[in-house]
Image 1 (spheres, rainbow, N blue to C red):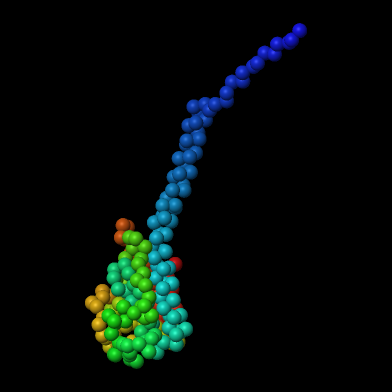
Image 2 (tube, helix red, strand yellow; image 1 turned 30 degrees about the vertical axis):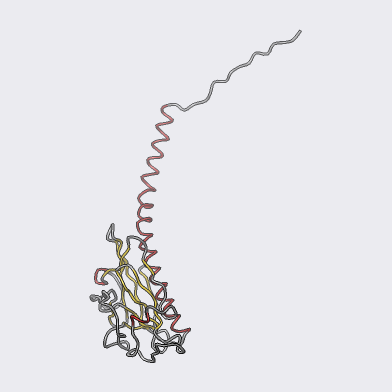
Length: 216
């Protein structure tokens, strides 16, 4: 005779109201602890990245000047509120006109059209712009003064100086009316970047030896 087996249905386990309230309270406490530091990190990430980007490009300009044994120089030029480029001022194709041997004989507008001379236009991350260095407090070295030049020129030994009409070898002909964003004071040059949506700012310094330091 076939025995019959009675199936027992186990009641499904669930959460009580007290348990759900407890879990939700724990989640809210964790969110209150984690979210503020995370939001601050996200807020600082973009402007830190922009500062490091500019510092890397300045260092690359210096290394290019050393590797090319530049006589006239390699210039890091701020050409807009959020853009810059690296330009080799020594004639890289002397077999083809135009030819120049001095900064005075160089034409900046022409040089910028020559791929062998001018690097690509680089832009800062979205929402980041260059700012006047006097708006970046805490930079080391001599007191920062208003920006007085648009570019830094590096020579064969890697030393840097601010491009002006009378200093650093002088400015070449044909330079547009760039807005100055570089302050050259004493032994240091200072640049400043700003995040538009919250006005966060960070500085970077370049020594006359060409070494770049960013705000910690």
